[in-house]
Length: 319
Figure (tube, rainbow, N blue to C red):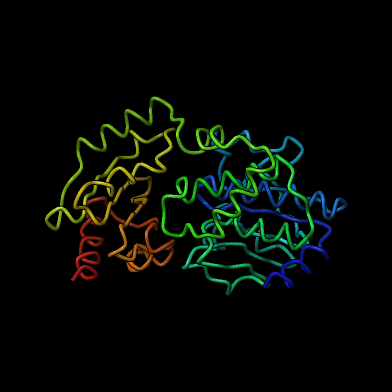
């Protein structure tokens, strides 16, 4: 996989790096790191970074002013030599979809167990990797790109984001060895963790309080869930809130539902391990997916309807 992907990069004179919907620390870190690595390995390659949304404020420190994150809807669609989606799959690109499909060759770099490579020519996929940036580090090693601090910071940001500072079970010995290598470049571990995970606007703290105040308990405490409406979430990042629902004593599954426009609901799931969240998400929506312990989907219906459907799937897995 890595050799075919490398050949695709080496042959490209124009490159699109594309992020999935709902950009998070791993996606942003992976994109920023690949953009920097390509500028070192193939300096004549023209690189553009596209996403459906504006780059979230918490991740702007990872952005290179020379390689800004652009909103796909504001950029004319032109056929690049290679388009690569990072930390997601071609079904979750929103307005960037047309740019991806117009490319002469398409690829993906991802670590989600539900990743599908049917729509790409080349892929680097490993569901055992703790983050997509862990795979990007492998690419940098394969390409002979040395780790400087900006490159290491982008990779490390994705690593600590997706492992939640090495708390989750995808954290393996290679993950910790990679983290040590990155820290040896002189990056500031505490600063990066604070920026991508801990610092929160007051609006998000207040939203967390409302979520906890209205949480509901099902299956004798094994499932805890809450719903938030579109109005109260406007302009507020909701990523990570669901973790407050699963890490309750006796709880096995946490679920957060955020109502959106046009009768859609954003579903976020977390599990302690007894329930495969990716299987639940895929059972609820064709576009659903993720990891066994963390997954999500965008679902048609009301929050109450989606909660009922998820409850059935979780109860089926718990037995």
